[in-house]
Length: 195
Image (cartoon, rainbow, N blue to C red; front, side, top):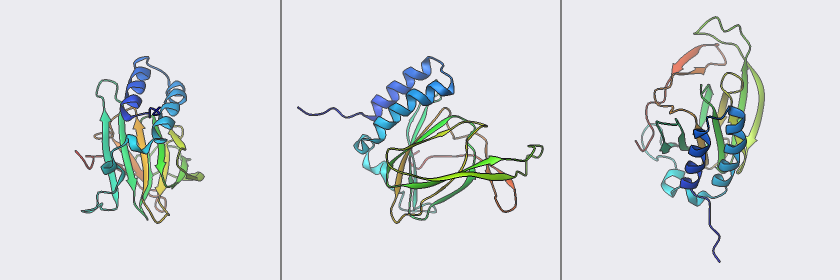
């Protein structure tokens, strides 16, 4: 008898059903993390072309692939590939998120904003924690509570993650933080590598 593997379609179906109940973040993370754990345990659920860096252009070492987006629920699912040496400066998300490592590992550093939030162009961040996130592990992003992070691939091979958000990051105004100067710069995802 052949074991049935959990697919991307299974994950999307279960997440859409969950979001239809209008759950709070706690319920999304509780049930959604279980669904995401099942998905990242089956790398074959994601086509191989979405588990590789782009291979050309200014971001040849990186890949950001749209797997699913539902305008009705806001559900966004992407595969993100971090090549060796890839780095993303501290940034926020402004939506709930779950990130599961499917292959290799990534160092995630979390920060807290400790200034008074009076200035839009400056912030003081304090390092909260850092961890090497390994296959099967999931990070949760809680808007305005625990969502500012920096990502680094210190390994010698690509790391594959599945990112799940409550909104499409394309067009969502977010910010990137400069740890040295305190500068805050607006950022926005404009497109994914496959669309």
